[in-house]
Image (tube, rainbow, N blue to C red):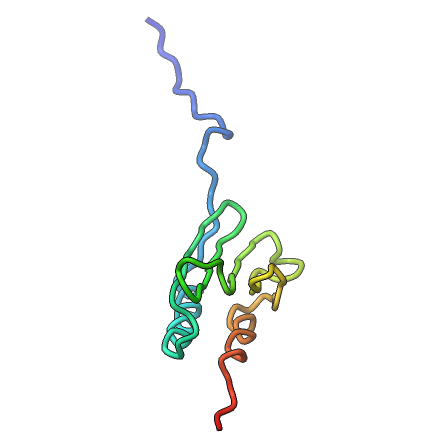
Length: 115
């Protein structure tokens, strides 16, 4: 009887790591989300954790396409910035390295003149 060393799984068979929001990032995003829900602007959200990006999508109604997407893309952290806010048409509204600064573009949309 011969004893063989165990053979590890090949690298391609391993589950790929996914990008996710950490607790601090979710705290900042959900704080803004709560204010917008209280203002009646947003009603639903969805979170996707993909291989190359984490996406927090906000909706006005659950059956629609997202109003805004807050994206975290680690591959862009040294170039354009780790975070981005993408509009409903796919246009990038703001991109940067600081999440709170990037989300200010959405807070400005909440400010309205009152008669």
